[in-house]
Image (cartoon, rainbow, N blue to C red):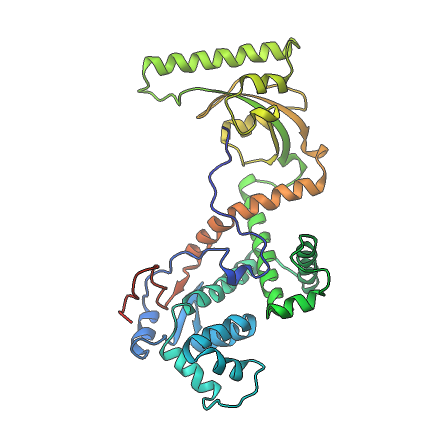
Length: 377
């Protein structure tokens, strides 16, 4: 079966994408330099004064707490509740009447610093990730306006309503209030998502060597005749099987050109690709760079209706027919494919960007399920 290049799992379009962890952060690098000094000055078992750094910029405990509380208020309250209990946290930071609280907010934050729950590691990751993407966007000239953020947020909410996630009897704000999510919090996530998409699109255009346009999309079908992946040390039997597969592909092509059989019927009869065989070889719309290199080069050299010579890949031999060139494909369909490509590349891109940025999280990561924390607490 013809496959796109291997990609990691997608970013997705969840409204709270940063916090919910649809983007997996890479393992933080070991502490060094100033970070080690900050850790040594921290109370035993407590959070360091410098909780992380990215692009050489330190994230202090105070700045982290301020941004955490502002951008992710519900998650902040949930984290505090792990230290002082949910009822006390709700009285301090929520809407409950302050009847039995003896702690001040500053005292609570001090307790949080001295006994940071494991989940705080993920919160630091989220803030560092926001800082990293904002910095890279500034360097690359990628901008997002408040109006664009609001428009994207409205589109997301509209999509949730269309999918039935938001009940018809609730307004958007009522739906969000039920889930203790504010529009400001969602704007943070949407801004992050839009900046990330802009950065990935620019990165993709660098790889292509030109701005993305209609010519980078195609609607095509294929017939696959499986063959061994021939290597210099392949056996004589494998080499014969490879030659037989190529000859079979050439014979099928000749039948199609002679109009003895249609491409679709030939795919259903002969193709070894179970994913497209029953669809007459239809691969749908895809983008330049999604398929393996020999297939990619061949399909983008064809005009609609043309049938390629047998194209050799590690899967075997392919006959390819272009159904529609990019300029014949509706713009919204091209955009949908581009969105899928960017989603597929998000995790890989963020991992590479995190390495470039020298992202470091100085908090202790959560222990794997079933194992105690490293310090035995």
